[in-house]
Image (cartoon, rainbow over all chains, first blue to last red):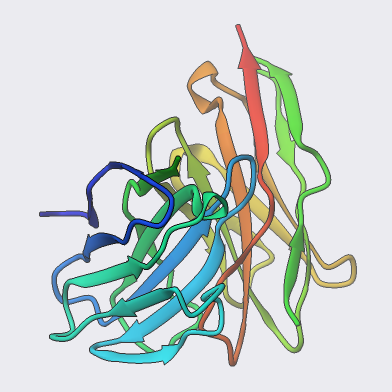
Length: 116
Length: 113
């Protein structure tokens, strides 16, 4: 597709359940970012990939959060043993080049996770 | 550390009037500054960015932003607001050596007919 695609759009999980969120970046984009956006807040950085390498995971809130991009394209964000505080919109973004802080990122529509 | 402040949660303007959405930033070294817009149930859409050079940056949909280094500001402006401009606006900053983009809390712009 032409843009960043995320699935599912909505996910309801019971507390303690594991979830997996998928991101299809724009074809050919080297950089991929995951952000968490709580209600009424701006996006908060979670992690960054350059191709298949996870170069920065400093924003992941706990070891229950895990992200991968094994072939340098599609990425999955996994949350184990979900807690209510994990409820948020998870945004994926991609950027054509790597290592260029001046490059803008293109965002997907997000996955709204609700933990009940 | 890098950070962004959007001092106004809400901005209301009448259609046809000029609008300004404020943003101030803090970053080590030269900043790269961005504005994004978010419509309901949509992802963030890129509007414009400042890298270097001319302090007045022009972007999509008639928006522009003015970089002011001495005031560490990057306010978003539009000469004549449209009702369709009503949305949530986010300012973001990235430092030279940073991979992550730091976002402000957002400003909800409402343009009334």
